[in-house]
Length: 336
Image 1 (cartoon, helix red, strand yellow):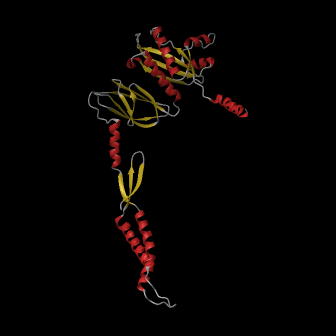
Image 2: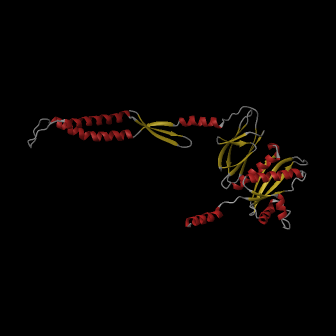
Image 3: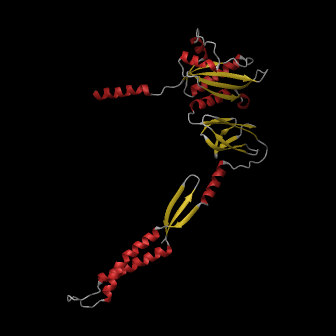
């Protein structure tokens, strides 16, 4: 029973530490008044669904309006006052949704989403309706971009647009997506290649800064792609890396040869001395005999000296060193 109570206390104490999901209120703005109300509502609903899919607990625009009745920020639809709404509603952030259109047109051209928290920090995203084809896809793209900015504490941002759109975006040999493209990316130097079938590839060298956006805009021209694909680049890298492989004589050849020579000397000296004095009578009256023991020592000495000579002249031990762009490989091999 005591163990059960202790386990229950441990589980209960751990519950507050479980990370809760973000909460948000979705509010439409009044920019581009020529946009029909039905399209605005469609965009707001699409943003709510996109946030919910991302794990956010969403307060509907209707609920937010009702709870804001009587508050000075009730009519706020701007970034400058959205933090007041977040504090009043008790949510982590407010999502301001704006549907834009070109001048004197009622057809939507883009959807922007701006996430504003109670500390007045804002993170924006945009989806191009004309390129993506629908309000739903544009809202999804805008939410994705804004959430990327919101969560990217150690990243910069890369935006790539191309004419025509739908081109593949590659960075440092890795395919990232298609244009129009936006994503968080590690700060530093990157090589970006934009390619599409039937068009010449465009390549840019860029430097991405922390928390900053780097934009790449390219106009593709018809022709054959001159830049290698990631697979071709990988094959080329393997060929280049193979050329940096080299074999050298291992110093262990000299170490082993020296050790064998040192071991051979006393065996040879002892056995040869016995052989030279075989049959002699010593001062104590004993007679020297070259027996089996002396023969074994002589054989071992000759074998050790011969092996030492082989290691010294033939160098049977080699080591291989292969250096690549990502590291080095070291190995030892022998042939006897």
